[in-house]
Length: 265
Image (cartoon, rainbow, N blue to C red; front, side):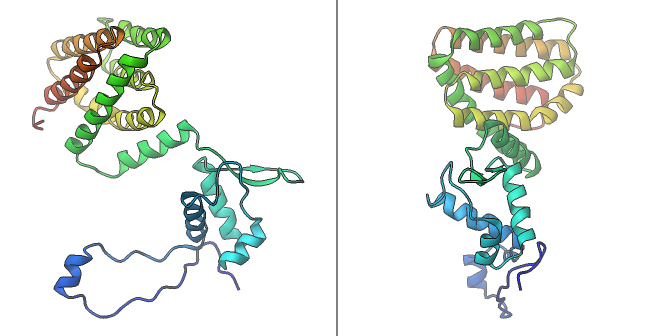
């Protein structure tokens, strides 16, 4: 009989105490057994990564997939709901060849949401996040200098004008600051670079806001940030890729050092 959706697959665990050598070779703790719905997710993952399932392909019917993987139909339904939430599949209601659960291209919004949450929840050291952010934003700035359209530049300009308001509060400034960096990434013309940059920058939104709130010389800090943003925009508008990527790195490093002086760059 298939397990219910919370059952686990059987595994064989060794009761022999690990030797020093084995601990050095296998430092990671043993993985927990998969829950039944995770067996289905793993099956889908393996076939997508192996090229057996591509966009537009159908998953086997619920009953068939449950029988194939020896899990309950409830477990299959739970896996499908998880894949739907991730944007990996969509369910087409009706009869005929088009009906069923279909593999779909993951929407950019779904991908960035997942990346943003994973980065925010993984407790990566902030200096590590900053270094990855710099690498991504250097690439985005360089590509934006080559590919930015008039609309891209206008979006950046509008955000700069909003941030120039002397009465802007810290929350609003932080939102516009985030949106400016996102706009630079969007202008790069590389969807993967854009999604990764957006996820990293948005995962930093609250840590940066928290530090903004504790900055005493706010007027001096915000004036420096405005000048950095203007210089980055000018380099991108002029098509100066080398300048743009160097300016964005200098900006991120100096801004982080200013609002978080206890952390060395």
